[in-house]
Length: 389
Ligand SMILES: [Zn+2]
Image (tube, rainbow, N blue to C red; front, side, top):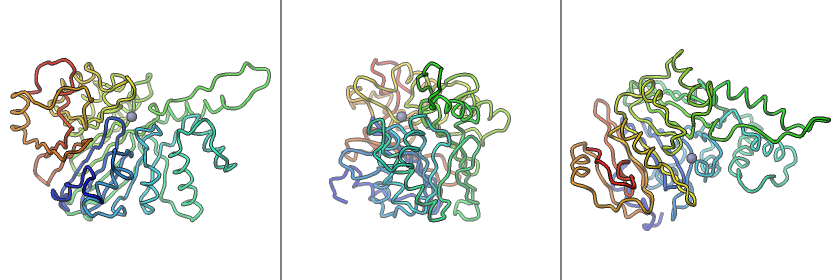
């Protein structure tokens, strides 16, 4: 790799130790990818995104900077088919032929149509150029199936995505990765809506309804011994018995792991994904909250209201990047003292886009590193308010 790549200095800092858990959240203001070291050089990836100046998916680039081969990735989960979560995903999947690939069992109508059309006719896809990654990955999965392989799967609530017995890992803790969504109710909705796709005689033509990709995105929980990490994907609050409400209901009848100390905030901190019951029922008090911001045209997430809701519930909340017109880099003395007293290290790699890295050795606390312009979430507020300290 060229020394001008944004993360070329990473190698100096070294990869995690065999008994160390590592969570990297990448997000360059449009895109999200989580790379997790579960121990002993074994990794999981959730979603894929690209950084300017970096060739290919950022997760592969990060591993490459440490001299780690893509074969170290054991599971890839693509939570949904929005561009900001699946850019480079087909390359990621093609580079990890032995990794298990998970996608949501529930599709949107557009995805279903494109899948059926492409698989049956092998013709150019319909409905524009979006979802190319989806078609490429479905083709890869179909090829694996033809070869008699079972290295792919369709995720739905409660489905196990990955398991490693603690006896195989230096830290000794078992690893259990479970899908929290889409719920079975949301999947049933999808099956009912498929009927809308068929032309019917003597009945008024109905517009294609169907779930949005966010409604059926795959939120998940990763348990490593007593540690739980809640990965919120882009799951939103939709209606009763759907989205986060369905996750909470399922959690009440059969708990998904211990309260999580790390929360990958869903849907870039949007108000539509914020759910106080998730915080009270599924998270430890004052957990680490990490998010990727989202910006497209004039749209941006999170907004000030979203930031305030999160920072009220978590003093330790971080963003992988900041909005370009966010506050300048100078930090108030209170923020500086907060970062110092919480042992949070700032890394300036002269990178155009940052990320958040969290590492934990057995028996130790989580150590947070912010690779600039990753920042404390409170410093993204457009209007100055109280500092996080
Ligand atoms: Zn998104």
